Image (cartoon, rainbow, N blue to C red; front, top):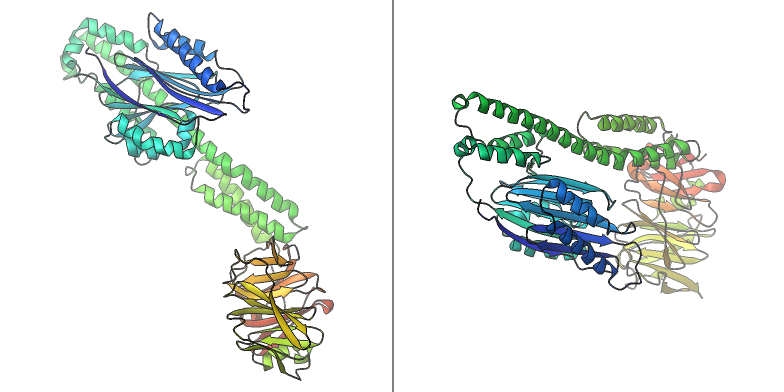
Length: 594
């Protein structure tokens, strides 16, 4: 057989103090290696020196072999592995070829891929972190095969899809030129790869091959050295095990191409029968390996979903009776994990059935969870809520109340009137001070105007019957009030937005605050209420026709549902007397708070 034509290219990431990699070639021997350490060593270039020592050992052991076959080369690799310290994480992928037979070995993690006839498949793969763990394989190469040796870190940096895209009709040097920048961009110092392209001369005719007994003997002997034939599972679509086996079956029989079984004499038929039996065993082994690989991937996906969802479900059950809102939160999180994950598992698999069983339990818990407190409402005397009574009789965008006065803001001014509705007077004129008011609040005699356009809270302090203005937020560069609809103050400032978000500020600076424990998100809320005398924060959630009660940490406390809340304009809370008043359709309604 004429000399094999091999072209190849290397890709190696930049090393650092904790990781080093290299792509190596000497004659027909190829290898990629990465070494990683958890702690920086005092010895300068320790990983570099160690790596070169390992490669030198491999070269020495390999080239002193008199016979190079699967087992003899394997022993050379095992001897080389003794140079790897236990505290070093290693990914070592080795390949060599004898005539048209390729031998592969992986120490620790790594992968070898094969591009054949436009399809990309995996020849050998290991995810083992133990540098002493060894996997091997061998098989025949075909003309125009492209073999890619990859360290474990390279497989993390370059996806199968990306690799397949750049392998199409390109020389190894061109492939490396495209992939190298992507590797350096990922900053994976342990990434290394070699792309090898194999070209062989035209094979002898099959008829001559079958008639030549010496060549029959040579084939039988070489077959004994091969642990399993190579195959090329396509990544184009979801090919099943039978498609992969079919590809292998046709590929192997292309070696023989018998013109007619009827022309073969009895001994040759016996030989062919034996070969077919061997192939059937190989095919069964491959089918088993493919299924095992698929089962492993399915189990990996399952383990990434099921334990976490189970944990959230158990959290929800433990919170029932203690905090219904937080229990709902946990159930909802479990439900989302399960619903997002079920499409990732094979239909009718045992893993999918377990997931669906848990999802049914979660949905039952959500169904059985306490419902919102649906309350009866009744119209009430307008004098029970001076705030809503004034709002119902006067023009204004937003209203606020303290012990003595009611305040209202319009596009032109802020005016005040007594709590009985008398003595109306303008106290602040809008001299281009605010442009898009979204709320009005008072705190210890000071007035606060929320302005969406300026992303600012304007603070007005009374002095000698006039008001001086300042900005409450010391820095509003990262603030967005574009969806703000209401403001409330107890000592901290709460801002409600139409998307249900609540922002909290204290002494002019933002403070962490999140609403938790709701059975469903706020929908188009319009008002937020609290003050220094109240123990809770109240939200008028128009979209869900309810009033939501929160602790001042943001945790869910209670909710009251009534149809009149849907079109409510504003509300007023009398926490001392456990009453909520709602202004809706020009009428004031009363709700008992429990």
